[in-house]
Image (cartoon, rainbow, N blue to C red):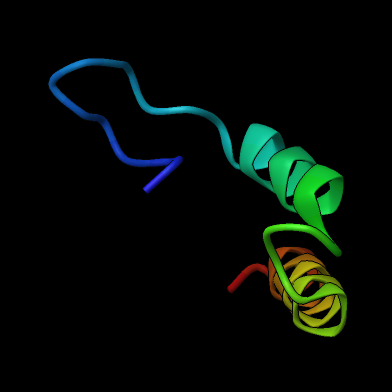
Length: 49
């Protein structure tokens, strides 16, 4: 939802979304799953997927 445009705000960048995921890891998001997602996203980005 962070990277999607809404009627009340513009879409945010993927880097912003990743920063938000890191910032809220352990409070709003499970830290294990947050780190796994960030790692997998980075691997996909490097592979050009």
